[in-house]
Each structure stands twice: as C-alpha cells, then as structure tokens.
Image (cartoon, rainbow, N blue to C red; front, side, top):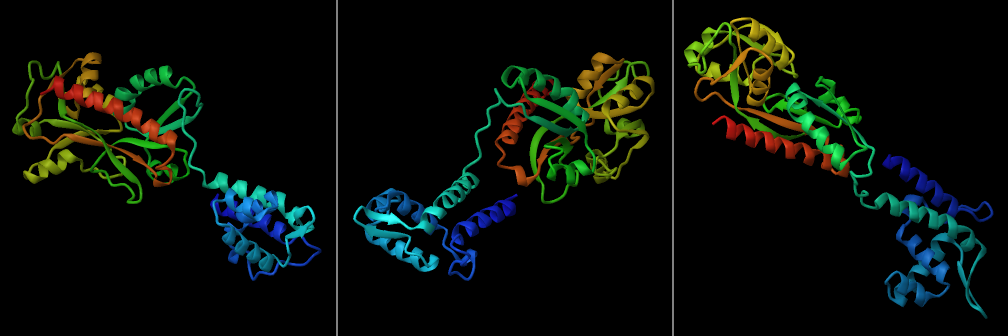
Length: 340
C-alpha cells in the first residue's frame, strides 16, 4: 500500500516536473529531488511574492529567495519573472502548479494520523477466533453491551485454528485471537497480551460422585479424566506439567475440543474434568454435575488476547480490545469473589 502510494506520487511529480516541450527536468533522479522545495514552489507560485510566500511557510525572505534559486536551477526554468505587475509565473510554473498541489495533498493525507473511531456510527465487522470460554462467558454480555454503545457493529466468532494465529491475523480475516492459554506456543512476531486469569475447578457427575466437593491430589490422579485438545497441537497442558513436577500423571478416557462436550461426558461417567470456574458454574446449571474444589496449589489458567503488530495502532481494534478487557476484568473479579 505504501509502495503503491509512493509510486503514484512519483508519477504525478514526474509529470509535473517534466511537462515542458518534451525536455526532461535537469535532475539525475526524482528521488534526489527535495520534496520540501515543492511546498515552497506551491507557496511562491500561489502568492507570486517572495515575502508573502516566506510568511506562508514560516521562512525568512532570504531563505525563500535561496529556495527559489534552487528551484530555478533544478527545473531549468525561471518559474517567476518580474513584470510591471510584479512577479508572474512562467507557463511551466502554471502547468506544474495543479499537479504539485495534488501531489502535496495526497502526501498530506498519507501522513495524517488515523481518523478517530466512532463506535456509535461504525458498521465495522470484527472477527474473533476464540475458545469456548470466551464464546460462552464473554460473548453474550459483550454483544448485549455493544447493542447499546455500538448498534451497527457486528462481531463474528470462529474456532481457533493454526491459521488463525498466523496467516488469518496478518490478512485481517481474523482481528483477534482470544482465550488461548498463556503457555500455548504462538509465532514470536505476534503481540500476546494477558487477558484473564481464572482459578481452575473440577467437575464431577452427581450420579457417580454424590456428596464429593473436594479432591485430594491422590484422589485426583486416580480418577479417569476428560482433557482438552490444545489449539497449538501440544497435548501436555498446564495441569500435566504441574503433575509432572510432582512425578505424577493422569489417565484420560477422552480428549475433546470444547468444554461443553467434556461436561456432558462427566455427567454420564465417573470421569473428572478440570476447567475454569465460570465454565463449571455454567455447566452446573445445565447438567447433573457438581463443582468440586481441586487439589491444593493447582495452577490457575492464564488466558491471552493476541493480535498482529501490523494493526496495533488501528483505533477500531484498540477500542474492541478495551471492551473485551472490560468484561474480562469483570468475570475475573466475580470468580475471585465467588470462589475463594
């Protein structure tokens, strides 16, 4: 995009500076031309007066006179000629003026800071690749909030794939990846920010484990487990690393893609699932399962928010991240309050 803009500007300037009867301007290369002289050219030809042109661009009269001499030398044209009516532009200067003005305006637009993002009027479509934690816990509240503050904005969620954390972020088919474990491996060039840290709890079926509300480490490793696929392909989770440090391991009877499937399996078997508190609370309202305190010192899950550095200064993306962080802070606070 930048190279295209540069090429277009250079073509415009080439035309403006070579417009006399087929004679190429007296320069080795357009790239050697001081573009600041074109700002001064526009002021001189517009004002047709050295002092007024100098005031317009905040230069001294002597500096403007020197710039005029440089322009005359590089363009091989007098540009301004003194007459009874004062300084008058030459034919070449008049022909160049509209082209130089257009080129300078385009450069100004290219260098201007990004326009402010107005969520109240924007119809932006955001695509978020996420875990089912984000989709189940955050998205309903987030969409309800956006309907009030940004009614024309659309948010689409999709499952996290390998491409989502690589190509999709770069080509903007995905704006954010939200909810991945901080221990998951992602490409080093991506911007990974902490999002939510939440306590892990266990989920047990009421039929197979009535009255069980706390698990010792010994009981925990004896139980069959339902575990989860890692989006990056690493099947050893934070819990497995934690157990390995204690020279322990767990046996799993199923590995699922999402928490919902795990909760349904737990409800029908003697297996245990270990998951974030808010997901466990949701499933305890839907299925015959109980939230069970895990073994002491089990690590919390630290979830992240990932974007591509190409878009770090995008006002719309910054705004969306602020909204997601707001709800992340709320659920993190409620989890600490409810499950201490």
